[in-house]
Image 1: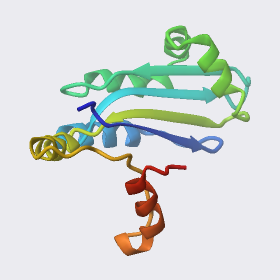
Image 2: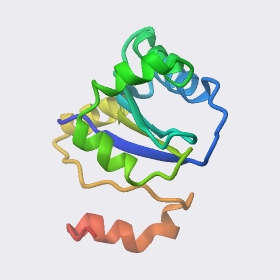
Image 3: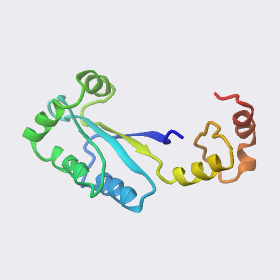
Amino acid sequence: MKPRVQLLAYRFGTRTPFEGQVVGALERLEAEGAVRVLDVLFVWRDADSGEIFGAGAHGGPGGGNLAQLLTFRLDPAERRRSSRSVPADLLAGLGATLTAGESVIAVLLAQAWARHLDDAVAHLGGTSLPSTLVEPTALADVAPQLLDLASGRTA
């Protein structure tokens, strides 16, 4: 079965005091084994100059690749260097959505936990139906969406 991959994106307001919390959270998720971080992209529009900067990193054992995002906001030379490694159209497109001082972080995660469940289902001859993220905590609360998924009707 294909690995389940999820795209998460977060927007931050002007002058957010990044101090490594997001990188730390991603490293903890990987260490716990629930997910594998495939890619991270950070795009920021400088509050003073309006210039758009970006940095990307890949996850992996030890989280060393993610740590490079920590120097991005602190070192102007690193910002310029790392921005060159982000596809120009992606950097410009995301940057155009930001006002001065805002930033966006996009994370691509492989849901490692799902492999065990998928293997058990496949062993029994079952197939995976499309999945969706929901807020309720009981299946009865999402009955219409569940019926749509089971019948092949997806939004």
